[in-house]
Amino acid sequence: MEPTTPVPSPPITNPEKLSAAPLGTTQDQARSANNPTQKTRRGALMEAIILRHIDSVFPGRLTRLGILHGEESIEDIDQKMEGLKNPIAKFRRGRALTHDTVRARLHTVGYDLYPIPLDKLIQDVIVKREFLSKLYGGSGVPTFPNIGATFDHGLHDFMYPNLDHNPHCPQVPGASGLFFEAEGVHAFPWPKIQRVITRIQSGWWQYQGQYRLEPSVSLTRREWASQGSKFHNTWAKEIHKKQWGKVVRAKIFLRETLGREFSQAELLKAIASERSFRAEVTPDKIIRAFARGEESIAVWTMKCVGYDNEFQHNIANKFPTWELQHKDSTTQKRQKQGETQKTGPNVGKKRKRVMREAISDEDGDSSTDSDVDELVYSARGTRSRPIVL
Image (cartoon, rainbow, N blue to C red; front, top):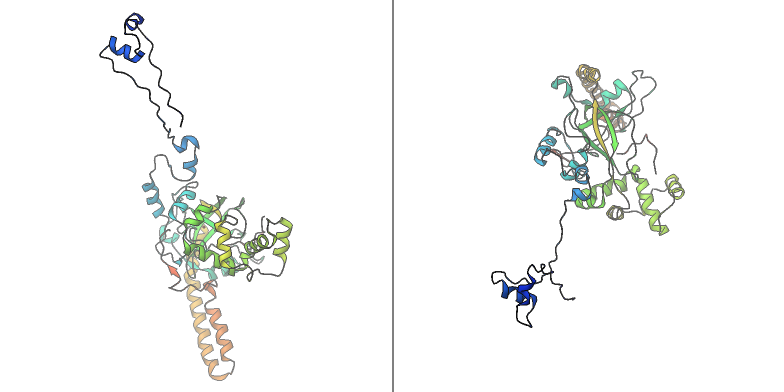
């Protein structure tokens, strides 16, 4: 360790007095002799670290992350986020992000509800997906259904997010939200305004408004790690099982077999093949790929920019009549099926067909009480859109 360097002594103000000091004394001793009230100064070296506020080093970084909010405190924001919850919402556990992750991304679009000049009782009307399909067209399963040419209403902007898959989508009319998917791509520009109708409970859907979706930052490695094993396992199992997870499975398979990052041509060839890659890519391999940052969950923010009052009025007015007719029709089918059971040997097949018709409005999900949770507020795939690499 190098010797410390003394702090320079102050200049001599009276050289005559200093010269009168005895020979062999140091300058400090000489000053003390001539000025007894002045204490001897000793040299000292002090090591110090200057702590600067992170926002002065990275201007706006904390604001973008939702940590600094000007005059709004975290408590104020959390209170606003309480208003984004729907008390009747039920959906499966396992996919909800941490509260901090949601807050940080919603900061860019705000936490306030879009003002809707419509009676709250009409806003809160929830309907069956089958009813919407009969009235406006489209299959009862896809998030983005294609509307047939026989429907001349001119509405081709339907988006049906499912809270089981996107628990941070809007839960109440006018609320902001998040939409995310894990299909092997980052969020891309989304110019189309969507008519968002969210599945609030199994079989029940609610119109939330007209929404603009903007690309947000994909889930980072640190955020992925902070979500917990339930989140990891749920996503990994879904990616492993579902058809929409083939892109991610193919990417993991190619990296493993090639020992390097694949080319776009190699990926497209793998996706176009008949291989599912389920046998080669296990859920554990999927979790490790996300943990390494090789794969990520794409995120879009959802901001309400309008509300179609006429559309919601039409739904609220026509649904009660449809529901009554639908129940009568289902009862008649069951009664007829009961008579058929007594006379024909093919009772089993017909009964299964009738039961499928009776529950066709459940949108293909098999949620049970053990699978769902009345979460407060803890945004899949879009089959109609091409893969963007």
